[in-house]
Every structure is written in structure tokens, then in C-alpha cells.
Amino acid sequence: MLGPLQVRLAGAAATFRTDAERVLLACLAAHQGSAQRRETLASLLAPDRPDVEALTYLRNRLTRLRGTIEDEHAAPAWLEIDRKQIALRSGDDITVDLAVFERQVAAVEAHAHRELAGCPTCLARLDEAVALVRGELLAGLNFASETWETWLAAQREHYGQRALVAMTLLREARLARGEWPAALDIAQRQLALEPWLEAAHRATMTAHAQLGDRNAALAQFELCERVLWNELGVEPEAETRQLRERIFAGAPLARGGIDTRDNLPPQTGVFFGRETEQAQLLERLVDPRYRLITIVGAGGMGKTRLSIEAGGQARASFPHGVWLVALDAINGGAEQIKIAVGEAAGLAQDGKQLSGEQVLAVLRDKRAL
Image (cartoon, one colour):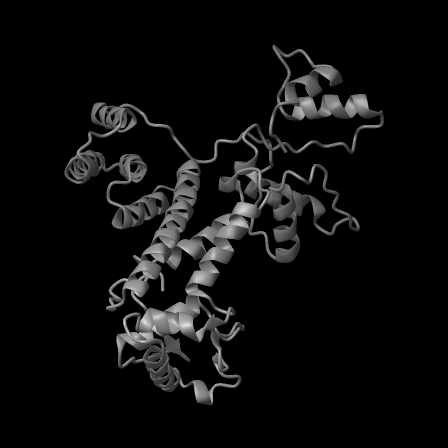
């Protein structure tokens, strides 16, 4: 539904005889699992007919729709129907892109990560959500009903804004990580939906410039300037003009990418196995509610290697560093541990070792692992 309507049954495209069938199924799918009153659906399909005629028209269209989607052969049936209401049932065997999209975006919004750019779980969720957006909601599904047009306009406004929010979150995260091709792709997809979205023009310019295509970056500014003037009658914002000037002059742009300092030892070979533990550990590391994580296991089980791998993957969530502090040689108390942390993090000033309290004072407002 996030684009032209596509319906597949066991991988094969369903063929509809009328737009009324498409409209009926689209409305039921948008409210999957929630029964819709027959009167409401009848007013959607035939708003200008008397109530009795409209309900008869709905009944006829419903019969055709059931045949198109092979409802009578499904077990259980796709549609839940009684004398008053109709619903597209919920179930693992029915996938509606709207529901998947909303679920993934809502999960990202609710997740307590430190930084989106450093949360692989949420980036994967956004990737899945954004991949579902193929264009305007139900593009090309025109039906002569004022009630339908009103309903469709409201749905398009809602999902259009949600799609732009999801794309913006993902675009900014990819820019922050220095993933220029991915950022460019998302920005261009945004511009296909809203050509006047100036932040997406800036992201496109930045990505082109960082990829070494200065001419494409400058051409994007000209396109932005033209679109804004033709569509809105305004000039580009100062931020956009300044970006153009920096690119034109060949001045360096913000580098992007993960620039976190660390002292993690280089690892040889490929880290294999422990996928479940690694994912669980990374999920906890990027969640600010977890301040201390302890890995317990027998010697030689790979606890240190697992920690180093997860710490490296979590770099983007800790802009002030990821530090491995060896405590095996420490026999004293908390003061020695604090000093060891300061030494590992390179906090000594002019070669002078900091006290434990000084280490705490320096790190207190930092986001470090």
C-alpha cells in the first residue's frame, strides 16, 4: 500500500476486476484486525446512493473481492464477516506493509539507545521500514467517491509524514556514520516524495561532495534553487547557500563517520559464533539504562574477545571513547581502578598521572565506554 496497490497470494499477483474491490480491500487492510461497520464501508464505496442500495452494492463488491483473493479456499478465511461488520483478520500469514512500517518506526522511537547512529538494531528496523516505501500511499487508485477521497487524503498525509520522519532519521544516521552512498540513496528517495525538502538537498550535496563528485553536488544546488523558486517562490536557506560555497571553493566538509577514539587491540581473523550473545551485549551497550554489564564464564571461553568485538561495534554510541582497561594486575582498591581507567583513556596531562577523583571529574560529563 505504500505505493501503487500490490496484492499477492502465495507469491502470485492478484487480479482485480474493479477499483471498488481495490478500495474495499485497501480500507480493510489499513484497519487490519479491526472490524469495520458495513454502513461505513458502504458510504465509502457508494456515498451518493440510498442506504439500502449502498449496502447492496457493498455486498456485491464483497462477493467479488472474496473470489479475487480466494477467501473461500483460505483456512482460516482472510476476511471475518458477519451481518454488521467486516474485517481483514490479523495473523502471521497476512502481511500488510502499513502495519510492518508502523511497527518498525514505533520500535525505533521507543528504543532507549544512546545514539541512533550507534544502534544497529534500530538502523536495521529503519532500513526495513524505509524499504517498504515505494511512493505515495495507494498511488493511482482513483475512485469516484468523495468519502473515499477524504479518507485517502488523510491517510496519505499521515503515512507521508511518517515516511519522511523515518527517512530523515535514517539519512542523518548514515551521514553521521560517513556512509555516503546510503545517505545519498535515502536523500534522493526523500526528494522523489517531496522535491522541495531542503535538508534532503543538502544531504545529497554533501554525499556527492564526499564521494568526490563536486559537479554533481553543485548541480544539486542548482536543482534545489530552481525547485524552491518554482514551487514555493523562495530562495535556498543560508545553510544551503553556505554549503554550496564551501563545495565550490573546495573547502573541507564535516568528515562524518565514526571518529571515536579507542585503545582496542586489533583482532586477527574473523569473529565466528556467539551471534546471540554478541547481539544481546550490543543491545545492552547502546541502551543508556544499562550502566554496568558483567560477562560471566569459565576461563578461555572468549569473554574478552566478545567484549572487544561488541565494544568496537558500539563506537558510534560513545563519542568520547571506547577503552579497554586491564585490571588483572591491580591488587588495590577503587583508587587504583580509577587511575587505571584514566591511563587507558589517555587522560594524563603533560605526562602527569591524574588522581582517581580527577579522572572521575574529567569523565563525569562524557559518554564513554
